[in-house]
Length: 308
Ligand SMILES: Nc1ncnc2c1ncn2[C@@H]1O[C@H](COP(=O)(O)OP(=O)(O)OP(=O)(O)O)[C@@H](O)[C@H]1O
Ligand SMILES: [Mg+2]
Image 1 (spheres, helix red, strand yellow):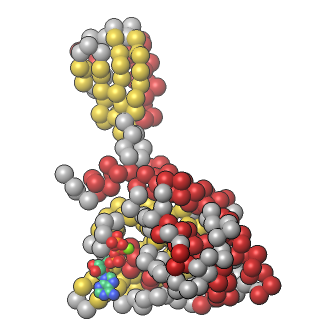
Image 2 (spheres, rainbow, N blue to C red):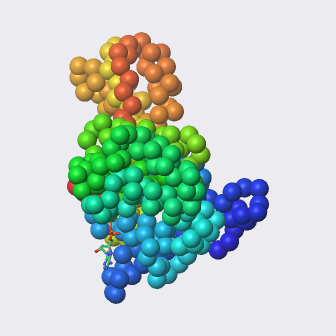
Image 3 (tube, rainbow, N blue to C red):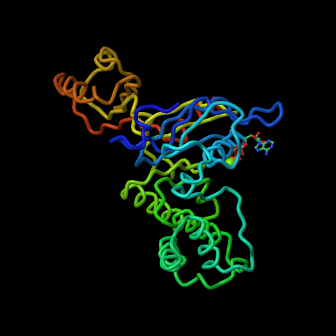
C-alpha cells in the first residue's frame, strides 16, 4: 500500500498513520472490522467509541503489539510493528502497571534505553518528562507508593520520552483529577505545537472536543462517523429573541414563532444568519439575541450511536 506520499525519501513526509481495511479477529469474534484511516502529521486525532468497540485493539495493531488478521497499515511511513517506527512512537497503554519496587526514575531510565536515548542523556530526559507531567521531585520514590493518578502521570511521562513523532494515548486521563486533565490538555497542545501527532482514545468527550482536530467514532468494530471537529460541531439552526415582527413574517422566513418573542430557525445554516437578521430588521423587527444551536460532541456521539 505504499503511496507516493509514503516515500520516505520524498519531499512530503508520510502521514503519521494510514490503515486500509485493518482487521482483527479473535476466533469468530471480530474485534475490528476493516479500519481505513489516514491521520496526517501534526494533528490531534480522537478515536472514540463505547466500551468494547475496538479502540484498544486498533491501538495495539498500530503499535504492532497484536497482529492484524486482515488489511494493512503504515505508521510514520513504516509497516506496523517495525521496530524503527516503534522507537519514534510514544505510547501510554490503557491498563499498565510498572513493577512496584522500581522508582519512577528507574522506570523512565529503562524506557529511555528502549527509546534509543543515549545513556548520558537519559537522566535529563527522565527529569524533563517528570516535570512535564507534574511529578518533578517524585522520581526517587518507588512506584508502589504512587497514587493512581501519579501512576498514570508516570505512564504519560514514559510516552513523552525522547520527543516522539507520534504519541498514542489510550485513555490518558481516566485516573486524573481536574487539574491533571487540564495539564494533559496542555501537554497535547504542546505536542501539536512542536509538530507531533497525537492519537487519543478517550471517553471524556468534552476533553476530546477541546483538543482534537478530527475524530473517528467506532462501534462494534466499525467506523460509524468521522470528520473534522469544526464540521461535526457546526451550528445547525439558530434561535432569536425578536420583537416587532408578526408570526406570519417569521413563518414566511422559514421560522417558528413562540410568543412573546422567541423565534427559531431549525434548518438555518450558520452562514445564512446575516441575511436572516437583515431581513428581520428590514421588516422593522428588533433583535435582542441571536443564538446559534451548537451541538456538543456528546450529543453528536449519542446520535451516531442512535441512543434515544
Ligand atoms: N485478547 C482478546 N481475546 C479475545 N477478545 C478480545 C481480546 N482483546 C479484545 N477482545 C475483544 O475485542 C473487542 C474490542 O475490545 P477493545 O479492548 O479493543 O475495546 P475498546 O474499544 O478499547 O473498549 P474500552 O472502551 O472498554 O477500553 C471486545 O469485544 C473485546 O472483548
Ligand atoms: Mg480500550
